[in-house]
Image (tube, rainbow, N blue to C red; front, top):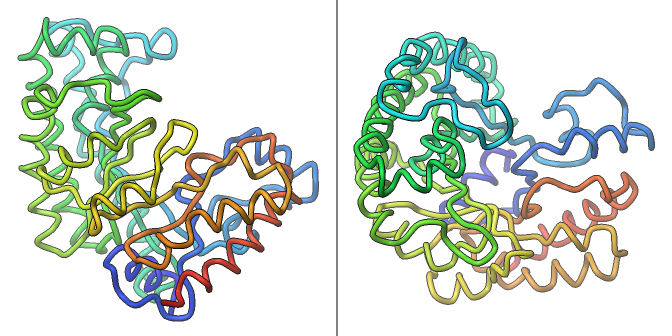
Length: 333
């Protein structure tokens, strides 16, 4: 099977062939890559080149940013760009630009031949309906806005939904992504940052507009959310979402428990990044913990977030050697 076929089959509960995919769903921290280059990783490689060098199946994320050129930058991480309807209206000319979609299409056309050949898999990333307003309103004001500025939240999500529909229509004329990832980060280490009622009012209606358009093409839709996400799984299923990632073990996410409770829910990630520098026995134990889920299908094992800079290049190679071993074990039912 090709790398693309392995990835697609894993996210469709299909027969895995010779092995499961070897995926790093998110690129490495800059400081991680800098460390590895000091330890022998060739410099100057892009994400795909690094993936191939390290023995991974190439997997790339592409997107069209609804915040186009000219969008003001926040004063600091989590600071607001807009504060009310008037300030949102004032930057509308910077948002939802056709230029962003055209830039995505340039990338998609450059990848199309190799993608169709099966050399790599592609994830199309869309800004989600919790994530996107937060990038404009800032972290604190966004949480207040569910109660203080509900109409502004709905306006932002209506606008970005129209942008996503234009994006999907355009990119699907060039290539068919192997999955859609909706970026949300709706949870922290103790659970969701919004209630089920707020999800149903401010997020679910917009999923209901775009998810059917995606699923008519047979493309699985997964949500990207850090933190403890288990209580959100029924919310997501009710909204038509097929799965979730990256399943952070540090936040208490238990992948075997999710599989037991939701047998057909897709998962990607889940490998505890904090064991990667603790020696081969610890890394093997983590793969053993996840092996039954690997065998059950519908799961792409990957680091549960970016590999931290505390992991040396040699330690990552140990992880990859065992990843390859368990990718074959996981394909044996």
